[in-house]
Image (cartoon, rainbow, N blue to C red; front, side, top):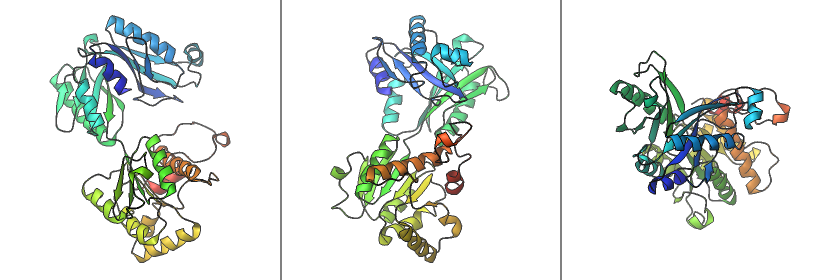
Length: 383
């Protein structure tokens, strides 16, 4: 999506950028989902998985023609939902704006930040009593800010809050008084936090690791495969991994922690099922103050032996409770590819609070709030 937007920008043209800024009920996409309409009518991205794309496409054309941004709600009622194609019954707030070198002079620098894995947040005014303020934006980095929302007071308040969202990688609409007052209403600012991709650390250069790396890349992780054996840890065997490292797993993980490259979004998959590799590695991993997920492959017998060795190494029951082992959900998987799907499914369940059950056997909301109502999140994310 960014590449399509940047391509139009670099030609000096104007694209229509539609961004989901707020959702309610069973909305099909999350805040931050975006669609670009190029001057030639080409569409890249999606705001609803196909439900309201036609209506947003038309609005984007109007916005580019008038030069005036618009905030539009889709799916206010079931009747309205069917009228625009939002048959899921959810509600989307979509902000549509014209993007060109004149309206967004910092776009090229922002794209470079994102591609270089440097954290950056975009704070855009999506509603304000003064219509001339709608569409104004701040580009917020850890050490600098560019742009303005119309006043120094508003800029200071939004900068502080945007950096907080950037630290957690969350997108959110923030509400202030018209001049950035903390207590007040009138100005709404959508913050899109482009934190670096979360990391997936896969230990063990085996055939299952290649499939897990592929799934991790598909889910948006920056994937590293690590193994101490150079004959197996090669880039040719793991083409979808972002990097392949030859090192002892526990030593590599400890070095990454010391460098600050492991955080609360990192997932760790231990696939070696060899005690000389995985026990020292898990001693480091299970004692980390915060990571999103730690899973280890192996049979029930391997799991029991591993727990005994880890207890002998001094790990507590509370630390061992953080371990997902045997790794993955019970999908009846047999092949490496099927097993990788089961591992990816467990990681998704942990992230979003899913139960791992068939949806046809459940009631209530399909989409969960992050970290809530999940046996997996209860067991794995108490870090």
